[in-house]
Image (cartoon, rainbow over all chains, first blue to last red; front, side, top):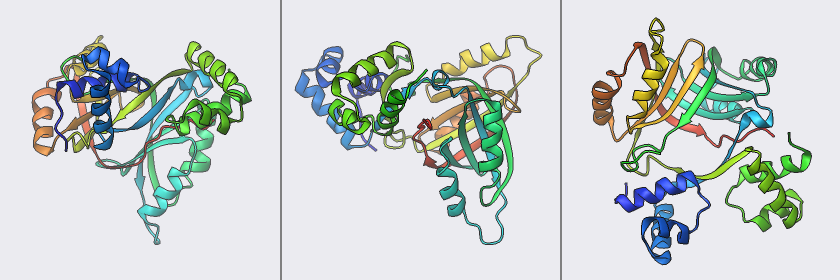
Length: 156
Length: 151
């Protein structure tokens, strides 16, 4: 864990809105010189507070009209292991995220599809046939908002 | 809609958003000038919403992430609005999603440790309005989280 002050939080907040901003632009907002801002950004990267960059796309506009979250319970028998399931599920292109969870389900998957018939195809051909897959619960995503989280007082 | 050049660009771009324009143009097989024009158009049309830094909450000391699946009391006409408005005010809530299905709303909540989570859960989450049922999934590991679209 790293020690961060308010300026680091402000930098994280700015970069999580627009990760392409350079040290000059960040410095101007935070009241730092360009080299000082650069050093702080480098430190945040080196300490892995910033994991990387992500391109945010509007899935709807590219024709992926349906996002479904699946809760998957494993029915492990006959030597099928967690690794087999994980390897197979991460290889499905329509599966965007895979989380191993504790609770009602074993895995939580985020699946994109063009429309409901396309989702049905993915579910039947790819998800239901996964090694070890048991009961599946589906919830269709209606809206989603991501918040900046506990990095500083002001929330954007 | 996208043509095949847009698809090539987006495929490479989302695979590695840290690429310089020159590298991206080379991988997508387009000229630098064309790349710039296409990227500008993709942004103007709102297809590309931005390039954002991904904060690693574990590195910042938030070791616990819990997915809270909430069923709301739908006899309350403003259940969704009231619940979501108040959930936004909890700093540790990093994601709010609404669903069609058995679950109405899902919150992603992060906490420094289990004691912190328990405190948040009792003092902030359970006091949110119109909850009729709530169940928790604790994240053990993220196996895949690139959120790349299959273009």
